[in-house]
Structures are given as structure tokens and as C-alpha cells.
Image 1 (cartoon, one colour):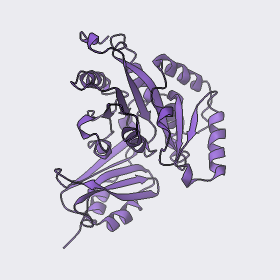
Image 2 (cartoon, rainbow, N blue to C red):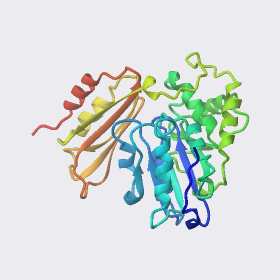
Image 3 (cartoon, helix red, strand yellow):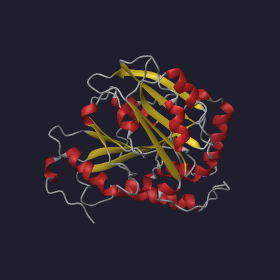
Length: 338
């Protein structure tokens, strides 16, 4: 069904949209924050989609709170695609119309479905798909082999791959990744980066991306053997059958050291954990928890300000792999006692 906007004359030119994709923990939110706080002079609106009951990524976007829009719970590549289109149209109808839209997709999203949502004749005069950026964790790219099919699909959909966290690996690992990419893709653009530090002129306004090209890239990919025994070459849309999510919330402060110890002992089939933490160590500031594989990072962020101090944590793992009672008990042990 085409989307018809009767106010299309309001916009003199289509507003570019950049989609940020990449597997759990690759660094999408870091890249998003770099773009938002860069010296480009653009009025940017941000759409954030997280897979789980709590949209943690929307809490971690820095500096543009009034223009951060949290999409409904669910994954935009399949279950809430109509909500995505409607939200984009509402965004560009705002009195202060954005000059650029950044869409951070969930780490489990397949970007082809998102791209095709913009391939709507009723939208072409209002927005244009500018670029799909796929962030890849250079240290964890070969981890979780059962998720390799999803990672490959995300890279196949992108017209630029950002190999992030190269500071955590050596030249041998980078060479191995490039050889692996060469064996699967005939053409791809690769940028090596640490902390997603990439020149803005490389990322923004790179030109219109034809959504149908994404389908062509996937068709080409399907003719190649993934090389992974866990890959069945079927494009899965029901993420509930592949992933489990779990969330934890509390108004009581946590000990950051106890939290660090607990996070370092998470099961191997928990791919990602992240959260905003109310801590006893620095109760006036938000702490940020990031867990990717065996790597645990806890940092102090901005002041709570008018926000209520509260811990919110989300974990994402293999389907049926999260022991919710055990995780809840583990985090309850991190509560700070007088």
C-alpha cells in the first residue's frame, strides 16, 4: 500500500535518511553519537529501535534529547515497519523540520526490510535513503557462529562497512577479516576505525541509495556458500525464535564493582547486555554498562538532572538461553547495602 502525503509541497527537497545497522555491541550508538555531536551544522532527528522491553539505546543518545524518537517495542525490519514509516512522516512534519534523519536499527534487524519500507512512491518526494552503514566489531566478528548468517546479511545490505574496534586486534585479525569479506562480496567499501571515529564527510550525504540495490546484493550473496555449518541460508524474520531478551529495573543503587564482577561472569550465549545504572559510587551521575562477549565496560555519563535515578538493564541472548531467575538473583546481589 502506498503512503500518500498531501503536504508534500512543504518540503523543497527530500530529506536524507541514513540507516545504522550491525550486530549486537558493534558500536552503532557510539557512531550515532559521533555524528550527532560532529561539526556539520545540520538539524538532525534520531530514530532509535531496540529489541527488548526497554529501549536502552534511546537513553544513551547524547545531546539531542528533544529530537530522539524511540520506536515501538519490536524490530523495525519486520513487525513495526508501518510504525517506522508513520514516525518518519511525523518527524518531517515538525515545525523545525530536520535536515537529516538517522535511524539506528536494532542489533538483530535485517536492513533489507527497512530499506524496502522507504521504497514507497508516496515517500520519494519527502525522504531519500542516503546510506546504510554497517558497523562490525573487529574483535567479535567471528564470535557467536550461530548468528553468522544474520551478520552476513547485515553487511550485504550495507553500502559501507565500518570495521570498528581495530585497536583491540592485531594486523593478523584484520587481514583475516578482509580475506573473509573478499570471499563473500565482490564489491564493498570498508573503513577501519577505533571507537567509530570516522570522518563525517565520508558518512553523510553520500548520495541516493536505491533500495532495490539491497535486494540485488542479497540475491548475489545467496549464490555463495556461507561456509558456516550453522547457516541454513534462510532469511528469518521471527526474531523471537532466534533471540531471547530480559530486562531488569530497580530504584535502589548498585555497587559498580559488584556489577562489573557479575557482568564478567555472564553465560557465553548471552550476546549483549547494556544499561543505564544508578550507582552508590556516583549517585549524581548516570553510569553506563556495556557488555559484548567477555568484554565489560562501565563508565560514568552525564548527571541525572531532572530524570529519576533508576537502573535499567537489557540482556539479549540465544533463544531460550537466558536463565531469568539466575540473572535477577545475580543483579540483586549487586544492590548496595548501607
